[in-house]
Structures are given as C-alpha cells and as structure tokens.
Image 1 (cartoon, rainbow, N blue to C red):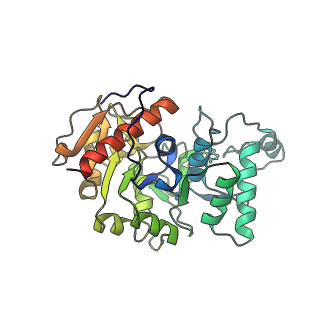
Image 2 (cartoon, rainbow, N blue to C red):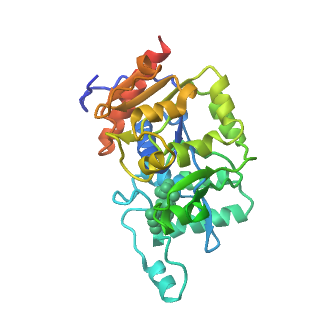
Image 3 (cartoon, rainbow, N blue to C red):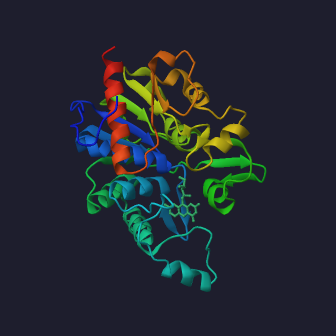
Length: 322
Ligand code: FO1
C-alpha cells in the first residue's frame, strides 16, 4: 500500500496501541504513531535499563529520547539529548576536573535536575515523567517500564560493565557475551492497565537485547503479552543486514546470530503474531512468513515516521480481521 502524504490516512480510531520502545528507533516509531492516534489510544512503554545516576542526577536516556522526539526537541544528529543545545556547564565541569565522558547539555541538565528533584520529593518515576511530559506539552502516555531501578549490565571482554560504561565510555566496542538483566523488577499499575486495555502490542524497531528484552523482563509484561488475546507485532531494527544506529547488528554477530530480519523474527519467535521488515532484506521464510509485512521501514523524517506508522496500523487491522 503506498500512501501519498496528502491522502487522508485511514487510521482505525478504536485501536488501543501499546508500543514497547527504547533508543532512537523506538522514539521515531512513537512519534509516527503519536501523529496518527488520539493520545488516549497510544501508550509507550519505555526501557529504563539504560538509566543511571550520574553526578547525583537520575539520568533516563530512553525516556528522554522519546520525550524530546515527541516534543520535536530531539537532537537530530545524535538522536539523544536536545536540539539547539549549549555545553557551558559540561565545559566548566571539565575544567573543574569532573566527569566529561557522558555529555550532558545545559538544557538536558535541566531535565535531569528536575527529575532528580521530583524523585527526591517522593514522586515515582512514572509521576515525575508525567510532570515532565505535561510541561513539554506531550499528550501521549509515556510510561517507564517500572518504577523500580532495573539496571542492564553487559558481560563483555572487559568484565561485567554498567550499561552506560559499555555503551558510551567504551563506545559499545567490547564484544558482548551476555546481557544481564535484574531478576525481581515489577511493572507499575499504569503499565499493567495499559497492557490489559491494548488491542495491539507493537515492538518498535529498537535493539531487541538491550531495549526490548529489558521491558519483557519486567514482571509480568512477557506473561501478559503471551497470555492475553492481543495482536503482537515486531518491527525489524535491522535493515539490509545492518542496524541503522547503535550496536544491534554487532551484538547479533557476537551472540552467534545471523544479522538479518529473519533472525530478529526468529528471536521474538512465539511471542509475535506479525513481523514488519524492510524490502531491502531477504524474504523472511520462518513459519511466521504468511503474517509478515514488507515495506520501507526507514523513517527519514516526521512524514516518514507517520507513513510507516500508518502502514503498520493498516497491516495490523488486516491481521486482526483475519
Ligand atoms: N550516548 C553517547 O554515545 N555519548 C554520550 O555522551 C551520550 C550522552 C547522553 C546524554 C543524555 C542522554 O539522554 C543520552 C545520552 N547518550 C549518549 C545516549 C545514551 O547512551 C543512551 O543510553 C543510548 O541512546 C542508548 O539508548
């Protein structure tokens, strides 16, 4: 189905969508859906496994990337942090001998300072995120996957590293042996009710291992997605055998997987009813093949995000009506 921008996009207005997202691909998918769906029809469950305390500040990179992207304030070059940023504070931190490895812009610091303050006042991460969303003028519901800390650790050639140490300080170069996720993390009440009310669970084109798996690992997200009568569709983060951004392709190789859309479909396996992948990739030939949808999955700009979201929703409506 090829939609021109000016044609009204036939979007189902009664479909409750829950998007599992992390990183830049997840934020772009969220933005495409937010352009089409009424705010009460979209909930974005965001990975918080990348979160860490830095200089005493609570930094939540994937929550911020989704928030800034939906607010139209994301830095288009890096994908993280804000656009039009200044760096005076970080420069002075460097001169004073503080840590410089994790770049925090002046406006981005305001987010971390405010979030840290709200948490110190006793708000949950969900509540603090709600206030930031409101102040940023974002109507879509963006929920951290849990209100408890759920740090992802990376077992690599240099030992067991905290996620940001591996991802930023070491530039995700050390070969990954294992992704270590916490055992006893629970979903918040809002996450549970969003999943209960969902007609579609969409897995964004995010890194399956460090963006999506941490969300599924939160109890009882995987169980609810598996047991409840929902349509579950994943979008491949691999395009033409590569990751558009970040370590997904490199990790698949290191974890002994083929770097292909088919391998991603195989990784999600029984969890998914449908799979969206790029026409540049080889045909997916797994059992799922009849329920796959092949299109241009590269989201170049806001219109591209909206186009892909509309195509996916149309595909899902067909799946549901099968
Ligand atoms: N990623 C980097 O590669 N280098 C950075 O200096 C950096 C700073 C940073 C600051 C705020 C923020 O929200 C994200 C930031 N990221 C940076 C990205 C971060 O590592 C995320 O975890 C990745 O985007 C993966 O989700």
